[in-house]
Length: 167
Length: 167
DNA sequence: AATAAAAAGTTATAATATAACAATTATTAC
DNA sequence: GTAATAATTGTTATATTATAACTTTTTATT
Image (cartoon, rainbow over all chains, first blue to last red; front, side, top):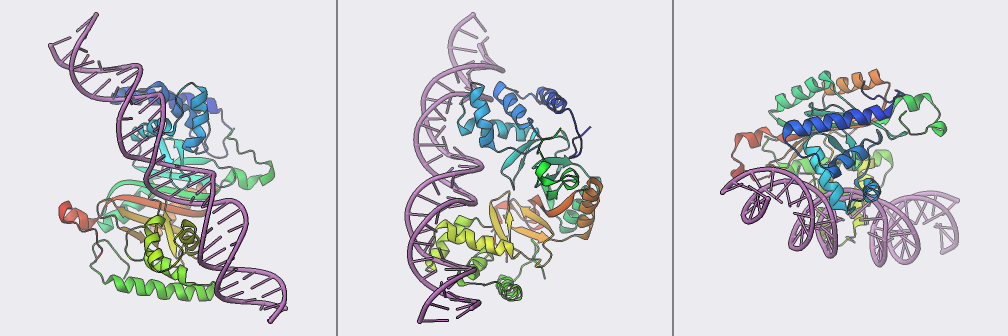
């Protein structure tokens, strides 16, 4: 089941699934899923919080790779091209894609309190966008919706007790 | 009439209107619409292309103001707080708001060819977003949709002849 | 006019991202 | 299997975007 803010989930399964899917997708597309790309994808998937590129560097260094910025940016670029990772532009941060193969419309709910982000799809939203763009004669290449606010989990519990963790 | 990609319009009217509206809004809110804030708003409104903060600095210098980055960022921050300017986060750029007073939902169509951006409102879109967030129990603070692609104007004419200008 | 508050000037630096070229590794052609 | 080619990664340097911190000036309040 897809991650929602309130789900207490076994996050290791998210990671396992994401890595397996990525492996398969790269194979299907004839793309090389190299060690550094795997590592970066794993690091991005370490939580449901969008992470900055520079936040990933220490772990890359620990794993024995070159940890200069181009290393992580190249891997992130590759992962974005494959649709495995999204960039949340208002945060300058990256998050694993949880809707592989449905790249056209990206919609994110971002909680200001726990900092977690949920990606979701909505046919209603897709229709609304199509209505707008068709009306304008606009040919869509990509679309990206960021909704910032407070998730139900954080609304339900006091701020002080909020751990910011996902499980 | 609001700017659309295909409209050949008298852009000086856009500027005049935007400045007059801003003057009025600041007065109504008891905010000081200082010279530098006016200048920055005018500069942002010089076109319908989102402009980077550093692109504004030369003109600020020419106008005799300090042109260090904080000058322009402070003005832009003020203008954003008043809802007079939006930041297009995927471009690290700023554009004048063409729907004053309806800040809740921002939707932008951004043409990759002519680089112009159109802000629009859609009740259908607003409903779609409400449906999503209500369903998730998510309390929205702000939302921002960026749709990137090719405008009807650029689709209609060859790329080589495209001037990127708005009138 | 004296005081306080807000805004703008100024210097320095933080945070994010990319350019350019060298070295290495993997793939393809033979 | 080896040479040639292409792709990836290492490395150094730097570009781009944005903010911190403190000073000076301007505006508003007493």
